[in-house]
Length: 191
Ligand SMILES: N[C@@H](CCC(=O)N[C@@H](CS)C(=O)NCC(=O)O)C(=O)O
Ligand SMILES: [Zn+2]
Ligand SMILES: [Zn+2]
Image (tube, rainbow, N blue to C red):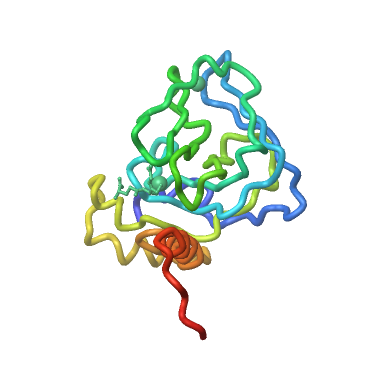
């Protein structure tokens, strides 16, 4: 595979520390960085191939995890943050100078409201949860990846131990469907 999936995946995955207490994320500006403090580890960390999540330059995938919004605070240079698309479900706060996304937040009624989306690679600390799966994999075709390369790309994910999905992982898709069903008043059949 010629292209980089993501630097944290290309050469195999480094396991995180389950007792990791959190740390700080900084944008890529050479000075006056936006700094975000996270009071815990992240969860559901995964590679995302969608066009909206922030990716480091040269990478086909983003790596993004979630953290309860109460565990996130902006520590420095909050005035540089701008919401990329206020109408999107996930409001992504990016640094207006370097373009890095510091966090994504959901304000609408949504199964994931209350969780912020973050990129742990913006941290110098080690121990963040490692990626658990790859989601929105087929979305990279929409950004110009040749569909003929998809088998090799999925095989590369498999070789580092990551399952690939074209939306989210089954547990997360089940969570979304459960939320939708409960909202509609659907009664679940007995097993
Ligand atoms: N194929 C689309 C998928 C976009 C998409 O649905 N992204 C997912 C994963 S991050 C999502 O939940 N988006 C909500 C949002 O961006 O607000 C693309 O690549 O733009
Ligand atoms: Zn910046
Ligand atoms: Zn995404």
